[in-house]
Length: 70
Image (cartoon, one colour):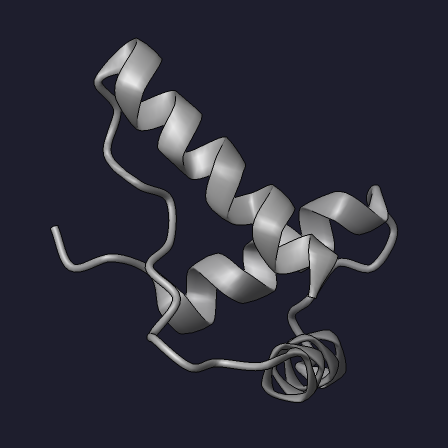
């Protein structure tokens, strides 16, 4: 659950300091198992580039699945 806290904190800080929109909006009640399933599904997609830093893959998966409606 700590990864959730890190991402949430990062988004909140960016919103408060740079006036930038949130990069993703996790639904209430989403748990670590759901996040893991989201990441695995994203990584298995044929167009996903896995030759980049792991944090970029995780961020891409979360943004793709839980991007905020702008």
